[in-house]
Image 1 (cartoon, one colour):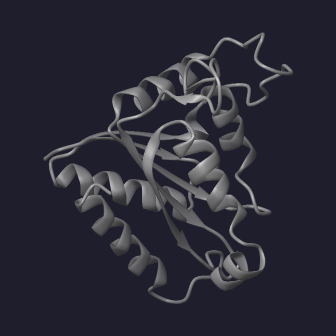
Image 2 (cartoon, one colour; image 1 turned 60 degrees about the vertical axis):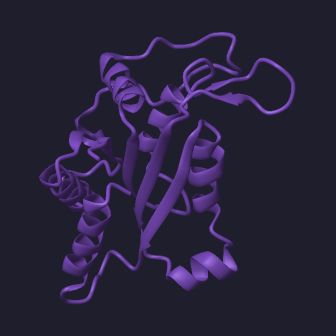
Image 3 (cartoon, one colour; image 1 turned 45 degrees about the horizontal axis):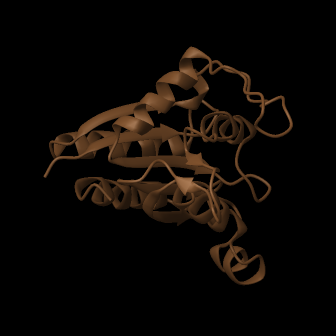
Length: 193
């Protein structure tokens, strides 16, 4: 059954593996009959600084952020491609999350206990690259960015299940390695997962 899929490339450069993966995912999913919308963060214009303490004041969303929010609300499956830099997200992508995933938009903080997620009925896939060897990231660092993306952002907001595909190392891949990764991404896209 066709799905509505929103692909967000969170790498700020014009050329990157994240861009290649986002493009490959979109093309493969579209070829399978899924409805696609895709955005590259480098093409968006917005202030990544939330600018306030707490949520009593909110900065109005710029038109590009309004479109991102509309795409998130429209989709049944969100795909985010991103590098991991210094153990975290690129600044512009983190700024987008800070500005878009807000109370009243991504979660409702009113009531007792944990806030109520507002983006339910959607799933998510993060396709992440890094130079940290997978074993170092997993066993030594205990995958902090996985938990931030999966539990503190996506699942907290209602996007479940949220799955992560991690490709490492990425800066100096061996011959044919990028093509193998693109093929793996295309297989995910064919199944819209």
